[in-house]
Length: 112
Image (cartoon, rainbow, N blue to C red; front, side, top):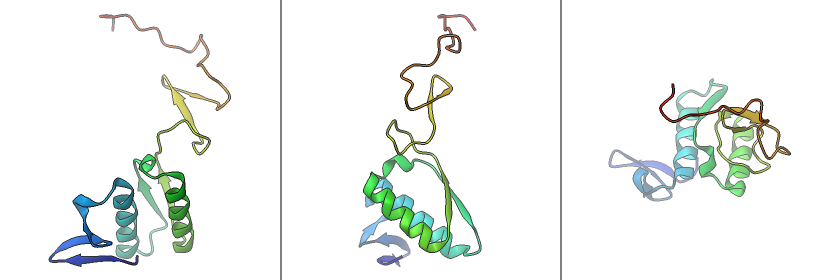
């Protein structure tokens, strides 16, 4: 990954130390490190993919494709880029605005 290096024993990307990188950059850098450490690995698990905006997500996807690397990821959101939307513990279609009443759990304060 261009501009990724180690300076005085610390990972840097584009001249920034890990703690100064955005969450999106940390995800990209950590994935690149995993790829370098284990080039035979065919996939990586990634959490918090919502830290990437759509443009960054597309760039990341292109990089992954070039590396022939798959990512199994979580991404919280309600946009069209989400393939499964879960509300109140149930999967709903993107056209649904509410979980069907028969499936909605009923909660009562103090009752377990």
